[in-house]
Amino acid sequence: MARKRIPCGPFEKFNEVLSLCWKMDVPFKIKTFGWRFFVNRLPFKDLLSVRGIVLPPDNLRCVFCGIDPENRDHSFLKYKGVEVVWRDISSWIGKPWRVMDEECKACFMDWYSFCKKKKVKVNKLGVVWIATMWILWISRNSICFRNEVWDVNNTLWKIKSLLWKWSFFGEITHPISSFYEFNKDPLLFLS
Image (cartoon, rainbow, N blue to C red):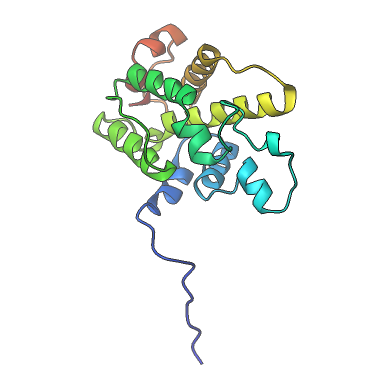
């Protein structure tokens, strides 16, 4: 008797994102973080409460704004303070700014497509987006667990320095540059 394949769920328009995540030239833990982010398996406060972990009602709020409930799309894409980070990174790489009103996979594909048009190397296409998410995640955890204060400028510099470091992952086709040179034209060093 032949076994029937049972589908896991409806086909999603952005399933390609999960495979693209594993192809980026970034450390393995970042690829894992990206995959977990896309399938909504990171311990955001809304998911913790769904899983039965009891948090005080005032602790369910977003660590960045302190008002709305914390969830993936609000805290990392739609909150106005985080939007400033995205706008500045967008401006830095020359991407036209538009409000992040879609969910994370659509947002990733938008940034991926922009980098593809700019002739960024295949393995570097999603790196700007995932670096921004990673630093936002680290910042969120620092606020939650070490009571640190969130600083937008510090976050921006951490993203830029991480991208500079990651520009040397994989096959390097450009001469090793200073951070100053990289900061002037980041996509040149990712191409």
